[in-house]
Image (cartoon, rainbow, N blue to C red; front, side, top):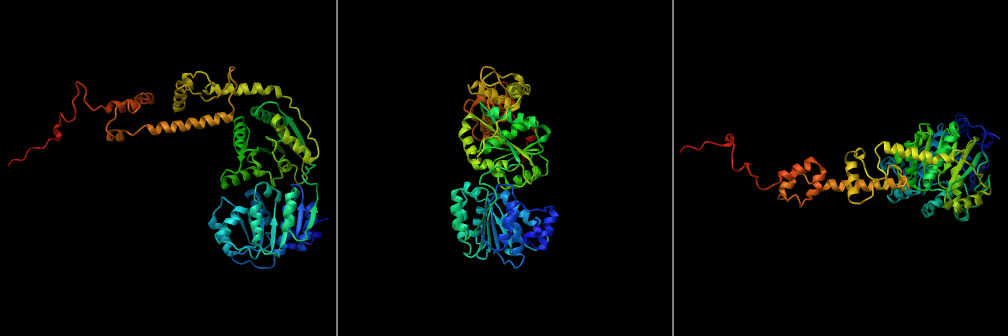
Length: 523
């Protein structure tokens, strides 16, 4: 079957041909004719099967007749993440370029003014995340009484992120008579209940078993017995063992702070890498994602913000640095590779304490993940020791050891020496045999704490003029011992603050220079 057999208009068919698609995917083949008939649809298909085009193509045809009014969109698409909403808007621009439909994208982190201006002109297609949509509605900038088509995309992800109360509120604001398209990669009981609530006599379309992994993805499991540092070494090892086959890769972490730690680790070992998570500013997130799509970066370390709906066909590998706590997220993560008929590989790193999560993943996908043995696992400790030696060569301090003069780099060195004198623990940059090396996470926390202490110490240094105005306090009251450690300038301040002239010195009041004297007036 071809797209011509689905009943699409010539303008849409021409746009599809421009993109290079000739044969619809199973979900598109079954969903497009039903949507064109005006029926509600409950679609369930694994990620990467073309669900987005399954509703964008028929919507363009349906909305081609009619006119939008100010602040009253004719259709509404709700997406769980900003990246997914932006991708849906790109699909409408791509497939609707031969039409005259107007579109607005409402996502957080973007200007309210630009979004309000588009709404004031009237839009045919409104794509939004739940939070920003409710915000603009409460401001009175948007009316939902004219929505004819509602699309809820990645409904299971909405549920996981806690957006369903907002979605239910939004649906309550829409007209009762409408067409609703409900798409999800999995169909848990909660999603089924919401579908029964939102849809009227829907056509249920399911092309794959729920929560099934794509057959084009080769899976592998690497069981570890150490700590997080061994995970980072194993990740580097598997990337190197894959060699040139790693064209572009996604590394998924469960926590945002782990994203930063793994990113810095890979960057320090010479990999082309970038980071992406929800705490980043929206322009930075979009720029990072675009750089990865353009192959400017080989590896993207990310949280689950990139696990749903992002269409990056060229991803060759997916690495699960952590086993996802939600087993359905595993399906979405590995679904970022092996897309559009391509083959891909997905490797998962698992520690013993992650065994329960791994069991849940195996149970939901219905197959056991094959274990993979890394040949150079014995060389990880040697590699880490070599890395530690390089750290000592750069002037790092050993945990709990003594600091040398060469290791004190500017204020950072003096700060380390002060902590040692006070009995505090120094920041660890390398490894010794007596104690285990500090993890990168511990290094980061200690470094941040040291920076805070430094800022506090610098604030205690009162400017010279202010010291004189405050009554020239004795050096002991100002912490003269600390001032002596701060260097030559602080000692000079103490000397200049003495109230009485020393023997052999002439005070300014005892001797007035001749150029300041004025001749007395003669009567």
